[in-house]
Image 1 (tube, one colour):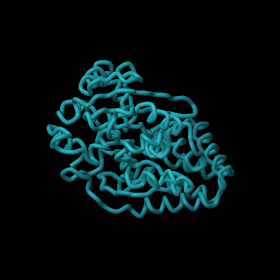
Image 2 (spheres, rainbow, N blue to C red):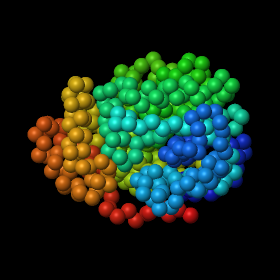
Image 3 (cartoon, helix red, strand yellow):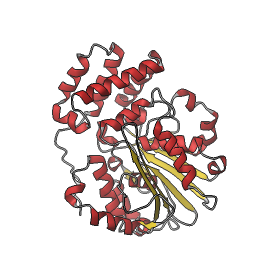
Length: 362
């Protein structure tokens, strides 16, 4: 079964009756993809999840929702499902923030599950190329602008009266959750019981081996699908590999992750994902921080000049078109070209131009 099936099976049990688990974490990490502008304020004023959902679907029509990229539509579909179930409908949402510009895209929301437990959710990467660029910037820049926002947000949203805190996110949001937990106030660290990165990229070696990382390592869980791409970038620990019903970039969609009872189905990483990780590591070892920065900027400038702003644009223009752009760019060296070729091949592995499993809203 998938996340929707899990909600239908366990949605009528409160968190007191069935304790919070890894599957609940992934569900709540996706809530931050929902646009709560005008519904939830950037303060401590709480809005019940069911009420927030009703307002959201009053504001946004089905037509407007379907204009979103696939990952956001998936999150909205899941959000529409959980609002009707006892386990989630009375969760209190507050402190929603969205901050996007040419340098960063940052969004987060806090959820009070009970008098004892708070979940902080960071929004992650979607199909927009700008979001993927932020993922690649992690190869040479620490902290990135969103890291600073993530730490400040966590320090602001958690109060001394909060008892237990879980910090999580999907994709880049998982990386933000990790960095925020590493760098938050010392008294706040004591309140954190879990840190979840759901198919999120890791950190550079210096941060991975830092004292700050060691302090939270025992609380950290990195969940990745069998065909992980984003989650295999940079250094990470405590990997939990889960089975997914799709391959390539479609496996990044958590709705494809397979659930058995109250946990994900465990498996091992696919060799194609491991191969990409090895190539990326070789690339990091070969180039300096400055060279990486130049490469990333050149790559995404090249895509932008050719009006490629999303994965959908890549699908529309065709994979061979994008590969030819890279092949004919004389600035890229052999290792860089091979890494990009492997990455694009993985993204489009088992992917068709027409997605058969379209999201249908109620």
